[in-house]
Amino acid sequence: MAFRLRLKTLRSITFSLILLVLGGGVGYYFGTGKINAQSVTGLTKVVTNTQQPIDYEEVDFSLFWEVWRKLERDYLDPKAIDQEKMVYGAIQGMVSALDDPYTVFLPPVQQQRTTEDLSGAFEGVGIQLGYIDSQLAVVAPLKGMPAEAAGVQAGDYILNIKDEAKGLDTDTIGMSLPKALDYIRGKHDMPVTLTLYRDGEQQPFDVTIKRDTIVIPSVELEFLDDPDGQGQLAHLTLSRFGDRTESEWLESVEKILANRPDGVVLDLRNNPGGYLNGAVFVSSEFIPSGLVVTQQGRLNSKQFNVNRRGQLTDIPVVLLVNRGSASASEIVAGALRDRLGATIVGTRTFGKGTVQSAEELRNNTGVHITTARWLLPGGSWIHEEGIEPDIEATNSAETVDVDEQLEAALNAF
Image (cartoon, rainbow, N blue to C red):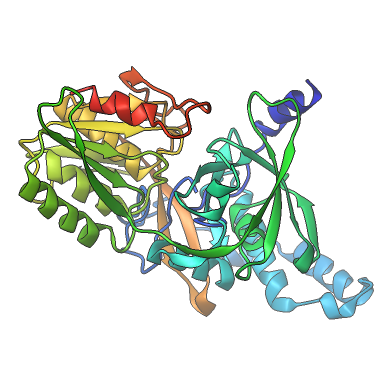
């Protein structure tokens, strides 16, 4: 009971980001490039601030410099006074003062790692990190990666991170996702211990995971027999919306067209998101024309419509989702439901409905700023609510070799 009360307290605290930390890593991906990159749920443009600009010369920084001088003069270990780190820390504090977990300043190491996340190869444990009610948590373990093999599950709260090689043993209260990423990632074959809490368990528990090279294909395809034995269905798994997604997707679509199945199960389980244009690209494969998603900004709104002629517009599709389906994957699921009446099977999705602009800054740093929210074609904003499935389906822990959710999706045609 005491631990549950502690969690309720933590839910009132806003931390500083939800970063797709594949292998250390979100609830969704941030962009990696220039100001016009499009990221996870967002980045279509930077919204211009039309308020009266601040006269920066009138901003009183005297207290800042007073504290700086005191640190330089009095701090016990003068070797720890690193001017660059202190400046970056000050900027991070300024950004986190907005109390928005999705707006963040990234020093060079974290900025580089967001790029690695979308490229799909890095050293880690295979966890997508995010926040559940403001507590650092596992959005999803990556299929076939060390965290999944160690038994980590979507929805697990991460309470502590321990790495003896790094001399690290720290709880995650107030920890930003870039910091969590830095702690969880590490050298190949080196272990990291996570203290987890899982709903339904009486006590937290430790899981030790050995790091490995995490390489993530975006798209996987298999053909399964229709449950009635009369035909074949395509099981198309989309795990992320990254740099290689479109080319991998088109390869799979070619195979689907060659095999002519009776329907497609689009499996978005544990897909934490990625580039917004990837969500529009995938949605356009099934929706003939019209609206996919609306970006509602501070000053204006922008509609994203079908942007190409899809090749699967005449084939029935069922969506398969779970708590690890977030951001761009929620856009796809919601768009196909609202526009096509597609059936959604599984469990409630994560609920990530804001848009971030991602910009590279000097010295290989970066900043991600929440600029808008996104709305499904039907007008709903699913932030912190998620999308409820039409057919509720869960997997039983007692039947490891049976995918009950997939079976439910196959039976939904």
